[in-house]
Image: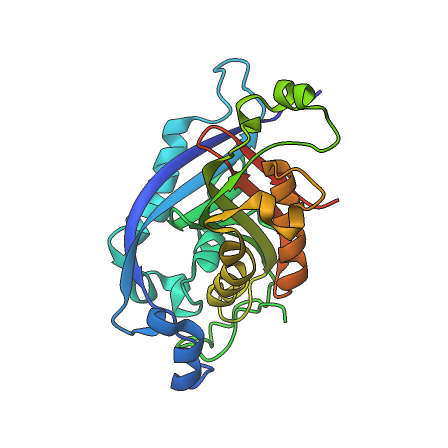
Length: 139
Length: 154
């Protein structure tokens, strides 16, 4: 019988962003996004939680090599997003508004193809302690 | 309306696939309230043995943390729902109603004991009724740092 284990690794990154939908008028953008619509941006200390699942490898006792997971998270997420202006410096956000929802989806899409043995279970992104989004790859 | 990553962004000619994505939005709120756990269906002795300190006739209070989870397709604005609408609804129908109040005096607890379990289901029912812009997945209520309760509907 399969014994699935879930392993979560956290990381922090600081980034700035603003919300703007080019299909809407300036007034609509302002009404919808409020202060988040300021084009000069504002920032958050994001906390990322990546949860992978898998069976324990009988040789190593690991679900996943944490060092590898850390390297993948560093390369795909932190190097690309830490201390960046998401709208201008992360390619995905030239076509998506960098909301916490889209950040979770984007991080999932960056990590998913890089993980082989352990399967990605959940990406959780905290914009702050009181607001966080979960994405499980569901369509 | 389902979310499709398209529209008038600068390089939208890099036509992205129209894919609908379901995400879960979690939001935390705080309120403080007092209560006394006492059941009219039990004797005083039974109440004392069941509820212990929580049966103290003068009541006591907690700083509750309410965590709500809503799911939905991420829309063209990158949102499960507009946070301002959610905050407005939760503040109006839950936080204002219970903050700095005695739960035993609330109509919702006229015939039930204001345990955190019951409060959790009361808040779930309120939000299910009042907030229709996303799907309510669960209500989680922290009574203290050490204990919390979750309700996902019946």
